[in-house]
Length: 82
Length: 328
Image 1: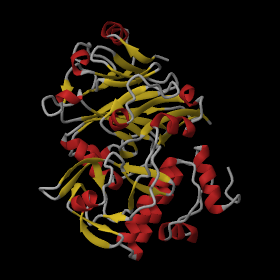
Image 2: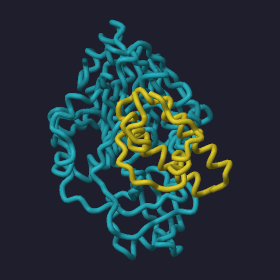
Image 3: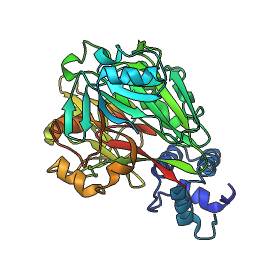
Image 4: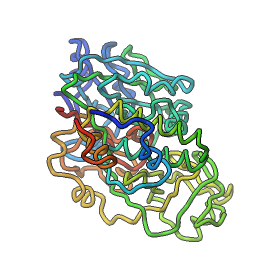
């Protein structure tokens, strides 16, 4: 599955705001909750970049999992293809 | 697949036959097992097909999945547990057992969300314990297959799966955030003196007492819909502090859980009736066992050890954690 690159602005949006997507994969919920908190405690541009890097790495590692693919489609729409 | 309660002689024979097993049982029976390809942890409480059970004779057995392409057993101390996600296989999952009250338990509980690679690979497991009569007298233990027990090391089985399979770690938590106050803490820890309640600083022990809060209900954090519990251990009004069974974390917004009338009914309403058939491994919390009086009561045939804490990526309380191996 093609994962949008770290420069895609939606990654930063996910870290900055506590979105209300109904994610399916437990780890998506936990890691994003943690990254939201991390950025709330240190909202520097460098921290934002680190959080985005971590989130992209998580999705890349798990992109073969159907629930993760569904979570990606929630964020980026059906444009994200298997 | 072998997955249920067996006597020590039967389990010993399987180990001698080369079976790869994950075991839960009282220290007295685990100490009788021969060296072999097994990991384990001490606990004498179980959920069985016939209901909740206390046994110091039987062992709960989970056989490694037939589909596993590789299995690696590693032990970790408080100084090395931060490597646990980095050691996970590229595709698969890891089962972790940590001894309660140990330094590695505390290190994992407090720091796992900051570990490199946190939550990038499925991690499920439990905190080993002892009979409640023996808390403070006997130390919970883990085993890494060589027949000797460890009170200060976590044991992890890293299980690799073929590309046609994926592991999915999930939780069942009957508790939801209640409608009461929003509670935050200034620092991470297993205990707290001060808290902020709706933005106002308070002594947390006094707040609990003055508001008549039922401490059998956990604090609940909502991480994008995942309800993460932290259970109360004790409220010490003399020392003016509150102790927890898992850490609270600075910045996270907690609420006391909404009361639950009947754990078994609530559980059955949340869970598909056939879930038990698809679960590879599960564990549930000793506090659910105690507060909901689960001895002799069954939970839709779902079985596993009843533990001093559950792991689904991080430490949880009052939650059932489980893993399903799916075809993809």
